[in-house]
Length: 369
Image 1 (cartoon, rainbow, N blue to C red):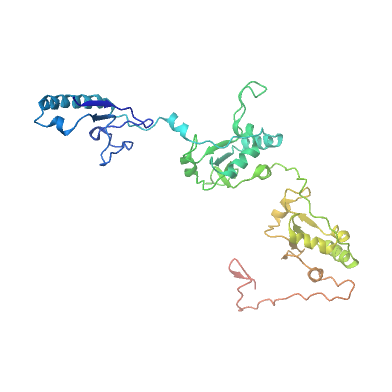
Image 2 (tube, rainbow, N blue to C red):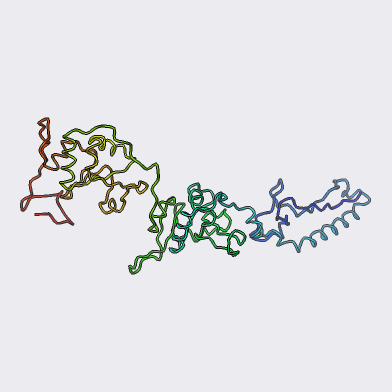
């Protein structure tokens, strides 16, 4: 007959419902009722109706008195809970965070060699758990390089630390260090940080190298040689060579010209097929892709090769694109062989005279006159 109080357990994990007057100032986990008021922590009235508290009811006075006592008791019980709306514990938050995909394979001998070289440079890999390119990099290096070895896995019976430190840059990842990523200026993933060996005054102690590298790219970063890839071979030359092709190829070699290209470049293959099988072996060719067995990437870097195919003549002139036999003869100033062909004349620009305006022959703002 009397009203009753039902204690309701909270349904939200790590959240307590507190009366409005007892909520912490920064609490945001209270739930609102239909009128927009914060709900009381499991303290609600049931069993009352207007008739039960009407003055005409013989028990209304006693009921109202008892109701007040029960309400006061409920609020007193809630006072110690006013700080129960705190944020979840760090361990509970970690349960909600995500980890990068599991590394499936052990580190190969090649990956371990790269990992040791990276460790000497105190390399750090910045990434995120959701980045597919970061996962590609981690999978290429393998478990031992990224995760280390447990005592049961290592022959010495001691735990081995990871050779490469991985830093999680997403705040939703386990062990995240997003503030460090932001402070160092990491803007893309993955990004590698290596100790800067430059001795320049005022230089940063590290340098950032963005992008996926793979084992071959990491070998280049740390100065390790890379083994050739079996498939890194140019297509076979099918065309036979004539006397003219052989003569031009020998003139190219004698004239000090060099041809830069890659095994996979279609235009480079057109140039090779133009010479033919017998003549091509006389052409001074430099392979720029480090994946090929005969690669010389250092020579390509020294020549500042920005596009392929590229011909560089003895006088330093550079000619991008496929060059016909006639064009090569003209560049080498070699008379046409057979067929009585006349080489294409070169375009010669006159040297500027004193006082002439010369917008295309300036060096550091000074005209070459």
